[in-house]
Amino acid sequence: MNRSPELEDLLRRLAPQVLGVLLRRYGGIDTAEDAVQEALIAAATHWPDDGIPDNPRGWLLQAATRRLTDQIRSDQARRRREQAVAAEPAHPETPAQDDTLTLLFLCCHPVLTPASAIALTLRAVGGLTTAEIASAFLVPEATMAQRISRAKQRIKASGATFAMPAAGDEREQRLRSVLHVLYLIFNEGYVSTAGPNLHRRELSAEAIRLTRAVHGMLPGDTEVTGLLALMLLTEARRPARTGPAGELIPLAEQDRRRWDQPRITEGVALAVRATSEGPPGDYALQAAIAALHDEAARAEDTDWPQILGLYGVLERLTGNPMVALNRAVAAAMVHGPAVGLKLLEPLDERLPGHYRLDAVRAHLRELLGETDAAIAHYDAAAKATLSIPERNYLTTKAAQLRRQASGRSSN
Image (cartoon, rainbow, N blue to C red; front, side, top):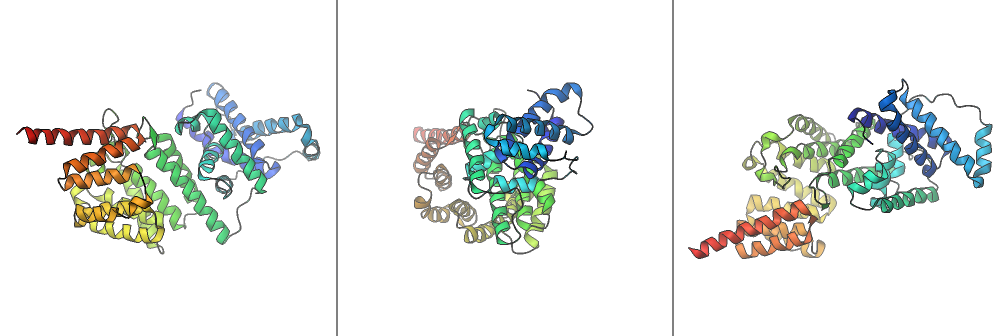
């Protein structure tokens, strides 16, 4: 089914609003979400030929409500609920209300695993079909359908209602869950963990769209601002991250003239705001690091001492081993590869067998001129990664070093 970009954007913006109305009226995320998906499919089928109606939200709401009441009538176990709905007066058209944030809080409920929350968010809030989500995560459609179904059942069993959590610690904790899910969706789109493509543009684009929506509703939250800044500053580099054949081009070798300057300008402004309006959180700190990379006209102009300092703060704040890995890289750029290698030693227990640990070691050994050790680590990293572009890059690096070593020995 082909959809124009404009229609795709419209349906994705309206989907959470229509779902929010159904949840407030009838409850039951499983049946309501299925009804909305049926309405979206109907719209995508009819609107390209018939034209977009004057009130597209009302059209979708009417179609979804009809589908939902049909489901209720066909389910004898819900007879009492059907009678209650039938006895109600007709609902007037609900005033336009954007329920995106409320729906995000529901889809990112603490009872769900991150994988389930991601799938449900992309389906219920992002408007992606189950097939699209399954394709993005390289799993069978039936597997993804089961994951989404289980997520809806767990939310139903938890007794969660369609309402924003009360202000205070509960809302703050739930917001952190929402931001974490959006962060994971973006990362999977920007650096796919498996498969033939380095990017999954549809995922990173959806994460940015949803984060913009959250930022529009919570413009004063510095972590929301920081996350949006981080996404924009990272996404700005996408045009230069791959070569003509889709091969990986590392940051230091990218043609920075191809970076998206409007995104960088917006991202830097947001990063400044996120770090200046109170103690910065982890997303704001990551955005500040990304801004320093993006503002450097050449790789050699990068302010590595400041990046190293920010990674130190971020590591103390999060305790994340991947942050420690990145701090080791920054330390190598400031103090030399031997210092970076020393900082990697404690990560063997925290990141056992992770390909990035071998990849960083390979790079630092290469800088030290330790060719054999570098080749061994490049080979190990290539064997461990599930991303084909990254595997090809690492394999190519090892092959280049072998050719160089062979050339020296023949001379």
